[in-house]
Length: 144
Image: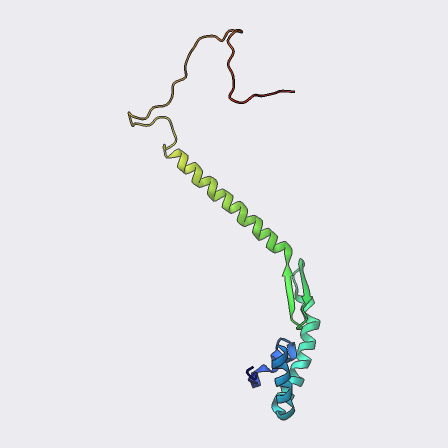
């Protein structure tokens, strides 16, 4: 297994708790020898505490903040995302309706085709239907 490389730029990640276990252990060993990183950890610790207190104040009304195990604050805004999803669905339905409408009005589906080989079926006129005339349907229908 490769030994994690410690950088002086890992200070903020260490304070916020986003380093994995091996990186955090390596950084803690580095902290014992590096005075500069020790000062930065102290500075970032006070900033991290202030950020944790200030975060809920600046959330939108429908948003919620949850703290993950690594200390990361995740913000969710359920109402806004649902509204966006509904608007996208309505917009998509309008586009589909407009495309279908323009496709029908182009004359492609009308019976007035100018092609002589294509004709509309003409209804048969067999005269009045008598009571004795019984026609059967392909499927038996039962009405209750």
